[in-house]
Structures are given as structure tokens and as C-alpha cells.
Length: 338
Ligand code: NAD
Ligand code: WQD
Image 1 (cartoon, rainbow, N blue to C red):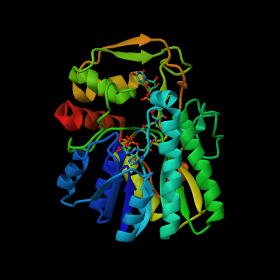
Image 2 (cartoon, rainbow, N blue to C red):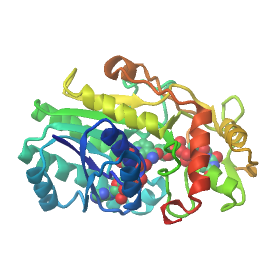
Image 3 (cartoon, rainbow, N blue to C red):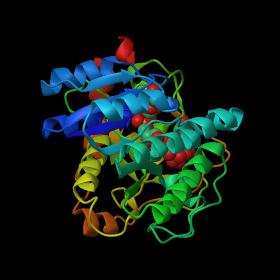
Image 4 (cartoon, rainbow, N blue to C red):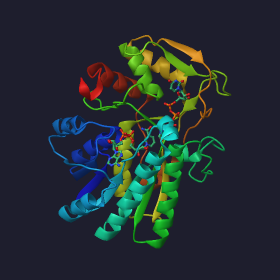
């Protein structure tokens, strides 16, 4: 009995593989290492004393999937593999649709062939577009995405919904992550972005370590308490435990579910800078600049459905998120290549 984790060498995947191994699951990973390093899984093995089986391959390769499903007794699939940069998706829409949408279709058809019918999909709060209200509950309108990355998540959710109607024996859960941050408390695994980070927390931590000079805060004229953007940041280990809870509840409720994974609390950019400064005892150099195109003012989750249906809620505080980010950054100034 094993769990297949696509994209398991990546940021959220590696923390989830660790959580699965820790609770005694057998884990098979397929990852083409297009945005990750095998070193993450070497460290997961060090931390857990257990080895996941890694296939360095593309989820678009149906022959490899066929081999994996025939060699291992897989009961469930957690599908993290995909491309995730909003800006890059605008420049390379076809790559994004192929990886994220076609990749999921290939995976689903091979699951169908192999008779494996439990899937957990990495969706995103981005499917809500410009939020109709906050907190965002799962019955809020989706759509209005402004980039191919976001649209690819929306399209996959629709495909999965349609597929589950045609194949009612399938159990499909789309987990809509809010803003994942933080790292394992050991400081051995964490987020290792390529080049200059686009996301706030990796950017802050690279300013703290001296790799980047100054954080640009994108706007302080939003209708929020301090004028800067507000988001629902969630510790990556809470996200990982959300996946375990989703696996445990796969056979309950509807055959297709979409569930928010967030904390239910919003923090502003300035809140994050202050929390990071406090926990790291560093000073973050920042300046206020123009708003970033496509950004929304505020976004946080109503996390009650996850609590009701999965018995799960996030427990880690913003200070723990910043502390663990800093611990990872200072121990690995160049990520996995240090
Ligand atoms: P990541 O880039 O660190 O991990 C994705 C992994 O998938 C990488 O290891 C990459 O090498 C692999 N991969 C990509 N395309 C592949 C393919 N065709 N075949 C095999 N492997 C492939 O990203 P992450 O932050 O860990 O995100 C995991 C998932 O969660 C993604 O689907 C992402 O869209 C989604 N998500 C992420 C965030 C976030 O802010 N990090 C928020 C919401 C949703
Ligand atoms: C957070 C806040 C920025 C960088 C993105 C994707 C989303 C999801 C997670 C996958 C905002 C501000 C940021 C900086 C700043 N990914 N900021 N200076 O935009 O909420 O979400 O990542 O699904 O789809 O859109 O996250 O970390 O980029 O920004 O002031 O250098 O920080 O304006 O208010 P975002 P983020």
C-alpha cells in the first residue's frame, strides 16, 4: 500500500512526503526536478530514517506512470507536480497549460487504467480571482483569474469535477492553498526559489541574509488597515498535515470536494516584515513602490469546512512561520546548492 506523490521533491511536496513517511506510509515520488533538487528528498530521508522511492520523470510520460502503477500497490495519488510562477505563466502560457492541465489529464487516465481512484489535487486560492468577499468560503464564486497559472488551476478543478461525475467511484479532493510559507523546524528542508523570488516571504528572507538589498512593498494605498496587501499565510507543515487529513477522509462525503487550506487570519506586508524582524533579530530594508499589476487588496480563508470535514486546522503562528523561514535561510543561504 503506497501513496504516489507527484512533484514530491518540491517545496510543499517534500514537506508532505516527510509527514507521510513519519506516519509510516510508503511513498513513491515522481518529479522531473524542473523546479527542485533531489537533495530535498535526501534530507527527508535523513530526517525520517526512511527512503521514498523516486522516479525522476515527467507526469506527462504515460509509460512511466504505467510502470509505476504496475510495480507498486498505490492506493492514493497526491498531485503537486506543476509549474507555479504567475509571471512566467504569462510569458509561457502553453508550457503552463501543458504541464498543469495536460499533466493532470494524463495522470487521471493512467489512474483510471490502473484502477487507482483516490486523488488529492494542489489547487489554490487563486481560483477565487478577485474575492467577492473575505473570508473566502468554498461556495464563493470562482473565476476571473488574471493569468494562465491561475486559469490552469481553475481548468483542472473543472476537469476533475466533470470527471468525478463520469467516474463516481473516484474520490477527488481539491485543496485550495492560501499562501504557503515557512520550513521544517530542523532547517534542513525549505523553499528554494530559482533566481530572484517573486513571493514576499522568500524575498524578505533573502534581504535579511544580505543576498538582496531592499524589499519593494507593492503599494500602501489599499483599503486595508495599514494600506499594504493582506494575505492568509500558512505554515508549510500545517499544509502537509492538511494532506494527511484529506487522505484519511477521502472516503467520506461527496466524490468531488474543494476545500480551503488556510489559517483564517490575514496579515499585511508590514505585519510580516515586523514579525520577521522580531523573530530573526534582523532589520529588513524596504521601500514603498507602486502596486504590482494583478494584485488584490486582501484575501483570507474561511477555514471552517476543513475543520468540519477533515478535522483539520492550522496551528502554527505567524512568528513560527517567520522563525522557521529564517532558520532555513540562514542554514542554507544558497538553498539546496549551499
Ligand atoms: P514547487 O515548484 O516547489 O514543486 C512542484 C514540483 O513539481 C517541483 O519539484 C517540480 O520539479 C515538479 N514538476 C513540475 N512539473 C512537473 C512535471 N511535468 N512532471 C514531474 N514533475 C514536475 O512548487 P510548490 O510550491 O511545492 O507547489 C506545489 C503545488 O502546489 C503546485 O501545483 C502549485 O501550483 C500548488 N500551489 C502552490 C502554492 C505556493 O504558493 N507555493 C500556492 C497554491 C498552490
Ligand atoms: C503577498 C503580498 C504582494 C512580493 C502568489 C500567487 C498565488 C499563490 C501564492 C500559487 C502581496 C506583496 C510581494 C514583494 C510585496 N501561488 N509583495 N513585495 O501574490 O498573494 O500569491 O503566490 O497558487 O497564485 O499569485 O503572494 O507572496 O507574491 O505576495 O510587497 O516583493 O506581498 O503585493 O500583497 P500572492 P506573494
